Image (cartoon, rainbow, N blue to C red; front, side, top):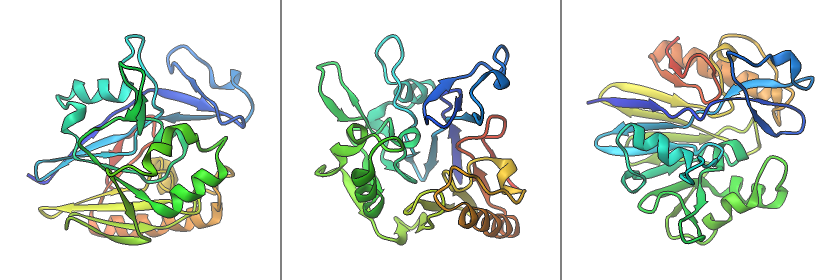
Length: 248
């Protein structure tokens, strides 16, 4: 069956120096009218299906719809997946636009993990760093439930999960960011989170000021682009407005 990919777009946003995400209507809004330095980004978690398993990659902003439903839950239901059917949640890092949907307030007003039957895979070093640093990049209330949850499996610096995922701590965007390479039936799917957030950054030499180590990020993208092209990877792009995934 290979690997099935489902982008779960939460919309297009601008983000400026204040690190606040503002919804952007690509048909009616004008980027130049936003504050100087604003970036235009998609917020796009992914559900991938491998060998009958539903695996969520990052969890979006954690916004709720007017009905009170978590937007991430709504997007999953649109493709026929209930939150209870998610087997694994794997976090590239814990910045608020990637980790906002880790937990939510349920109908009884209790903060709970968003996927009751899932194992959450999280870098322990990234979690500790997030808890120490907090705002504006990290929202402690979104992630603190992970600390003592039996649903969490802490990731080492690198490893192999269930013979289908090779992960590695690569840094760059933040000190303990991880990359992921999934493999099944000869297919290879790569998720680089904010190290490889957009297609255009993968094919150009680009140093971003918002990265913890911009030079490191650029070098990582060049490395992944070369290896991915040679080995026919499918790249997933979390922040790309036009291209959710592609091969080089």
